[in-house]
Length: 401
Image (tube, rainbow, N blue to C red; front, side, top):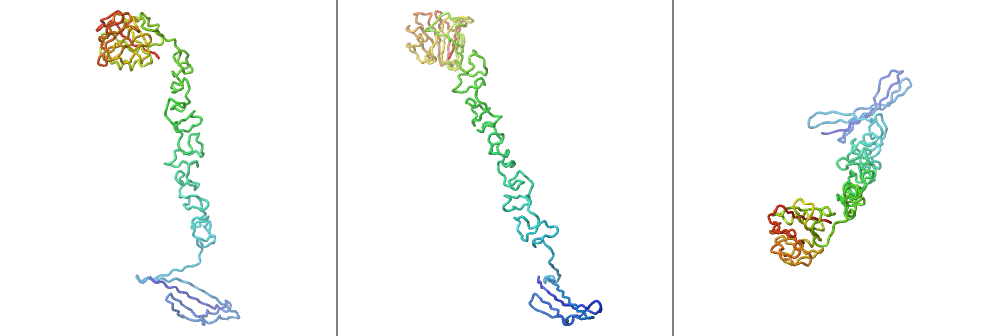
């Protein structure tokens, strides 16, 4: 495409209206200048014409752009003028502003509109961002500020909440996360404490309540017991200490003792002599308190024919098949889950074959057969012997703290 600029200057002398003269162009040159650097004179016109004593001169200048498309052979022209436009520095109709530049980050955009938040252009020195939308939950708020925790606007997908403050003691933390029990932050009015763990046995429970006596949760290392009530004398006192009980104690084997006398003791294993195969370990797992009592009686009786007690560790100390007992609390104890289990009065000889068959002070001797880790019948309850296979006599284990 080839373009040529053509400038035509015409000086015209106009006759006065009163004389009705003709337009004269004599002596006035018409000049054409082309983009190829050539100049042509197209005519001349003389000085102004005087008619009826009046002289009138007029000057007309026309600029035109002639565009010729060499490839198509067609041609056309467009005439440009000094018409108002955005960016000329003049405030024209339909323009909000015109600062004479093409910058989009000042107070007047290059569309001659006043800069506002939401127009998609960041106003330097005033806006931190401008994403051109009305969404308040993205990275740029509707105030054209970068979204941050604490601005009061929940940033979707990033913040769970935003209450516009930096307090860690309300429902929304300073990290814009919902407050919850176990987060280590005390939500005032909702939580009494928060130790950031799920341990239910320390000073702050798993429900973020302060541990107190009577809450039904044992505070380890502080409370001896916790029964969830404030009833005195029920085994756990109002200060969560165990009720002091005058527990039954006796030195050495005892005969004909009423079951009602055994305060503080609880039956944990009851079986008849005839039964075999009960695991000794299962008995000891059930009878797990610090003190053990071995006893025997006729089935259904409220009185024990014979009993003795001692610390658990002494009652269950393995003597294997030895006739040398473990002496504790006035009795000589023997134990093996593969031979026999029982006692005699302290100092009396013991003759195990596998149960003790010695005759001295027979009323104070108790023996149960064991084998293969299990109770296997029994043999004596005091002076009553040969009880293997007998279903009318009971062997009983009791335990106490």
